[in-house]
Image (cartoon, rainbow, N blue to C red; front, side, top):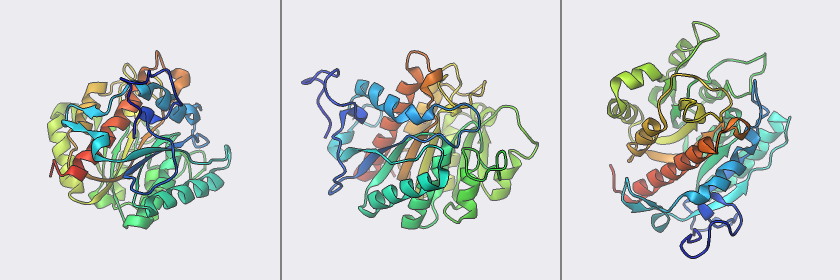
Length: 313
């Protein structure tokens, strides 16, 4: 249940996501919004640990009816704000174990997690929990970076390695997975090739903008088919003109409208979990990145509602 902003002003109440009820009671729940305030995996600038708080705060501006799908999300799905997973700053392995335990519990109750981060290191515990529950899952990964390095600064678990570890550990079926939005300068000529060698299909930003959103969406849907899908949105997939408050910005990206359109046209994809990552409010301007991150979350909830209602095949 969401508080009705026509009856209670947005300035009142606790700042839950979209004014949802804060509870850890999961009976009858379809989706649990979970904050994961962890940024120890950030290789450069930190601050993403405050992402979930900023997303919740600005999300009071959002409304329950999604006009693009003609659906009242909270009439179709029971969604709650579960609160935050417990993390230990500076302790990656212990934090991963705690995140996995929380998500294992949520997923075991038949609930789909929508996580707000945090840096992309915490994608791995999500992938592990979803993989344990559903078998190897398909990945749709929207990001300026592949995050498929073997290590970064000699460390194997950080924001740049999760989608390699997910394949190596057997949780991601790379042959039915796709990465979209990669661009910018590289550390090595192998930075893009390494994802392809792992089995991913990859669409760079230039390819996406040249082909058009409809073509890209078609390729995504053909790639994942009817498989169970984990959707990852890194805020830096968007050009920093529209999303300055991110961990590692990359110039020359798609607009906010481009990525919103792409998400909306993913209706019919069978999402079993999703994440919106790497909002860094320390570099935000007028909360525009936080608002976009919250809007991405709302669009993901709409996708889940559309799939549940069977409005898209």
